[in-house]
Structure formats: structure tokens, C-alpha cells
Image (cartoon, rainbow, N blue to C red; front, side):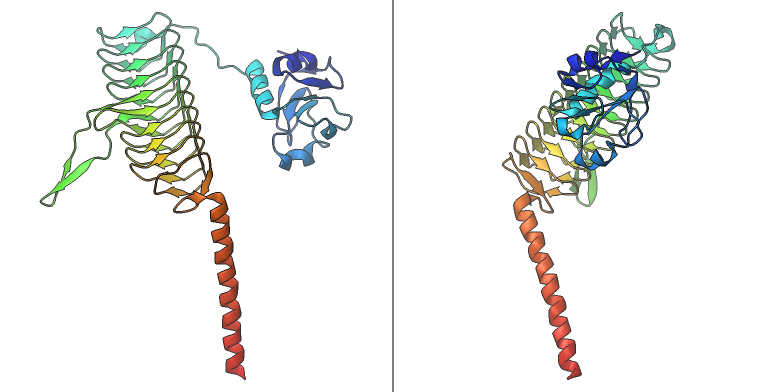
Length: 337
């Protein structure tokens, strides 16, 4: 498969610089460029590779970055490379209907154009809509609903009553709908609180591998449409996450927290139970949200505060350290006198 530079430019709505008939056969990293491929500059740190790369063309946002090389000028190089990857790399479609090798309860409803790989289990009352793909050894619990064109990778477990929207992607090892961490202590005995709710996942959600989303104690744990969840993320019972959020690796969101729309969480950040985080919040890596945040701000630290306040606090603490060292030095001088 190959495309000319001008054909790619039309798809990404860009402007060709150089040879518009140049044939492109794939995509490569800028630092490990390959002849016949196109790369991109999405971060200023990689500009140093531009004059060294073997890639035949590059997506850039600034025409001046190209010094005689062929390329395409676009507003967002990262978006352009994403669209180009879609041209060259698509998941192979299964060419066999493998339903006979799966375990399907007679009272479930599986659409005709669903692929069920060997070892998949579809329980009583489950509904899987058309064009979805269920990988090997996936467990689909009772009354689960999986929307159209969704992809569930091998070894995913989906507990009873979970609802998954259209075009969702769930990667291997993830568990959806497991019991929330609910216990009450009575006379020295830790008694389990029954977890009777479910999980509702919106359209176009993607969940990475080995993540866990707990069912609600009562009601629903909800993940809004277009939200993207990384690997090794834990979302506790009764959490509500809005649409279009990014939640990166090792984030933990405690029970009954509410996250607004278009929020982003850096790796290993955490959210305390019952707090509310407003729309378009950004929480830096390793930060801890201990109280509700208004939203529309960049937060960092533990406890998480506005990034400007965080930097002021860090600068102040740094000054205290320097003052302390100077004070210790004066004490030593006085002792020597």
C-alpha cells in the first residue's frame, strides 16, 4: 500500500512542501526514520533529528522547520500522523465465524455479524450487537450489553449487568463490574456490603490492559463517552467520569468521586472519595486530590493545588533549605572562632 504526498496532504488537510508525487509506504519515528516513510515533529525535543532522519517526508507545523526536505505543513502534526497511521495499519479482520467454539447461552442474543473467538463465554440474557469482536477467553456475564462495533480483547472479564456502548475497546486482562471495596465494621467484624449496582460505559470509550472498574454499591459506576483509560487504572464503586477524559497509567479514583468532562490525569495521581472535580481540569502526575476542585485549572502536588501556587510553595521550600544550610554554616564558623 502506498500514497503520494499530495494524497496524504488532502486527507490531513495540509500543504505539501517539496515533491508532491513522492511515494509514501508507511510511517516511522523521526529518530529512526526509514526511506519511503513519513514521520512528524510533535514535540520540540525532536527537532534535532529533522536534518538527520532517513524518513522521506515529515509533518511539521512550521514551514521554516523544513530545509529542503519534503514534507506537509499541518496545524497539528500529531493528529496528522494519527490519520496517516489509519491509512497504513488496520487490524486484520477475522475471516471465520468462530461461534461454534464459544460457549453461548441459548437465552443470550448475539447478532449475526459478531465474531466470538474460541473460549469466549456469553451468559444468560447477554446482548452483543452487530460487528463486535469478542476475543478468546472473554467472559461476558449475565444481562451484559455490548454495543455495535466494539472490540473486547482476549481474557477480559465483564461482570453481570454491565452496559458497554458502541465502538468501545477493552484491552486484555481488564475486569469490569467487579465488587467495590465496601465493608462495615460491627463489633470487631468486617462485614461485606453487598455490591448491587452495575457499570455503564459510553460510546467510543477505550480501556487499557489490566485495569479494573468496580460496580456501584447501589446505582451505577459511569464512564462517559470518548473517555480514554490507560493500563493499570483503578476506578472504584459509584465513580462518575464525564466525557472526553484522559486517565493515564496507575491512576486511582476512589469511591463516589465525580469527574467532569474533558479532564486529564497524569500517571500515579489519585483522587479521594466523594470529591468533585470540575470540567477541563488537569491533574499532574503523582498528585493527590483530597478535596473538590473547581475545574478549568492545572493542579499539582499533595494535596493538589493550582499549579502556580504549587510552584510558589516549592520555591519557598527551596529557599528555606538554602537558608537552613547558610545558618548551619554560620554556627560552624562561630564554633571555630
